[in-house]
Image 1: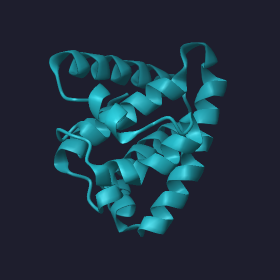
Image 2: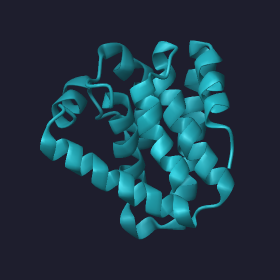
Image 3: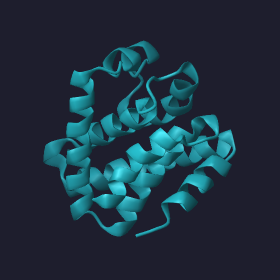
Amino acid sequence: MFEFQKLCRNAEALTPAERAAMLADLSVSVIARLNALAPEIHPAEILASFIIGSVVSDGSVSEKDYLGIYPSLAKAFGEACDLAGIQRVYKVSKDVQREISGYTRQLLDLISVADEQLAADIIFLCLLVTSVDGKVSLKEQRYIKQLCRG
């Protein structure tokens, strides 16, 4: 499909301003294409849950993580996405891990019927979000790489 490590390096190399602009534009584009593909299953919610899951895959959502993804979350989902709420919802627990796993399966199902460009854009969007601190951790890479097997 594409070179995953190259996408990781590209995301990590962006300046904060470049990353923010790409996040805003790509998130709106991806969500619009997913909604056109399968509006009846709320793909934006599935994607948002997977993306937040990728951020917490290393155990938590820091304020820096939140500040990096907030502009995209607000643009795509409204301004009601606050740090405390995201931390509360995604505090790592067995129930949340199962829920995130369910969203992962749903996103894999969506990717299986999407064109290759949309799949690549979804993966890059996740990498943009997780690279907000300038690095995509190995745990984050493993989490996002699940989408490459879809």
